[in-house]
Every structure is written in C-alpha cells, then in structure tokens.
Length: 251
Image (cartoon, rainbow, N blue to C red; front, side):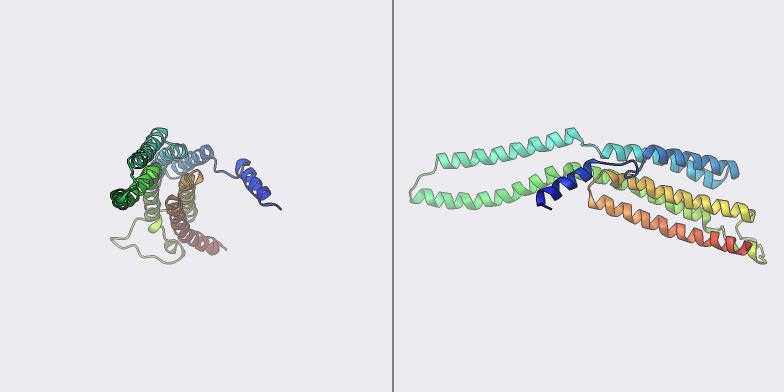
C-alpha cells in the first residue's frame, strides 16, 4: 500500500468513531448515581454511602472539567498566537532595518559581526519565549486536569480505608472482640455486598479519570491517569481477595 494510502487510512480511522470507542460520560454518571442509591438502600446512613455521594459530586465536576479541557481555550490561544506574530514581526523589522542600513565597508562588516552575535543571543531568548507562549494553553489544561485527578486519587484511598477493617476472618473463625477492636456487625452476605460496592467505586473512579485522557493529547495527564488506574486496580485486587475468601468459605 502506498504511503499516502496509509496516511488517508489513518485519517479515516481517526474520524470514524463508533459507539463503543469512547466512554459515555452520561452513562458513567448515571451508573454512579445508581450505585449511590444501591448503597443507601442496603446500608442506610453508612460512611460508604456518604463517600459515594461525594464521589458522585466530584464525578460531575470532573466530567464537566474534562469536557471543557477537551475544547480549545480560544482567548488564551488567540493571545498566544498574537504574541507570536508580534515577536516574529519584530524580528523581521529588525532584519529589514539591518539590511537597509548595512554598508559594504570595513566598519559595516565589523558592525555586522557584532550585530550577528547579539542577534543569535536574542534569537535564543525569542525561541524560549515562543515555546512558552505556544505551550501556555497546554500547561493551563494540564494543571487543571492534575488537580482533579489528585482529588480522584484521594477518593480511592478513602474507599480503601473504609474496607480496611472489613476482614472476613471474623466470620470464618472464632474471633475474640477486644476493647479497641473495630465494630463488626455485618453478616457474610452484607460484607460481600459492602466489599463489592467498594470495588465498584474504585472501578468507576478510574473510568472518570480516563475522561481526561480521552480528548487530551498530553503525556503528563495520560501518565497520571494510568497511575490512578493502576492504583485503583491494586486496591480492588485486595478487595476481591476478601470476596473470594468469603465465596470459597461458603462452598
């Protein structure tokens, strides 16, 4: 296949997006709302229900922010490109003035050498300024996305704290309740559902985080999303180990 054919094929793949190639933010939010209702139905006034309520609120804010960051910030982009044009125009004007006043004599050559040395230094600073201006919009989006991902990461740790004392061992063996032992009143079925709800919150948490990487081509944000997904998977794996212990004990 010709190179241009490969190029146009790639462009068609980018344009044609199916129903199952993107995360549906509305469905994610509805799933989180339904999960909150399920937790409140089975464990009314529980700490996990309040955590899920805060997670639902954070999910709505994160989805709105991810949708906003996926679009250009036109005031910043226009201001940056106007500054770029102004700087480039200033350089061209300086070159035009140099050519207009240059004389082909000994003094002119010396002045040209001195001007060239100064111009090289100025071009270096100009390049740094252009790099800063062009990437200014990306840095604004990156900072906002990382702040939201940090809050989602905190939610994941809070969920892990809620399942920390939900140890199936006290249901499967003789367990002596001490004075400072955490209160354990859940039955085997309730404990299984509680742990399952924790795992669901962690899974949905990573999916909300993935919304930031869906429309942003930024490796820093993508790495942060991947780190949060790895964290959620690791915490969920511990929860599923407890669920498997309960399931195997029933058999």
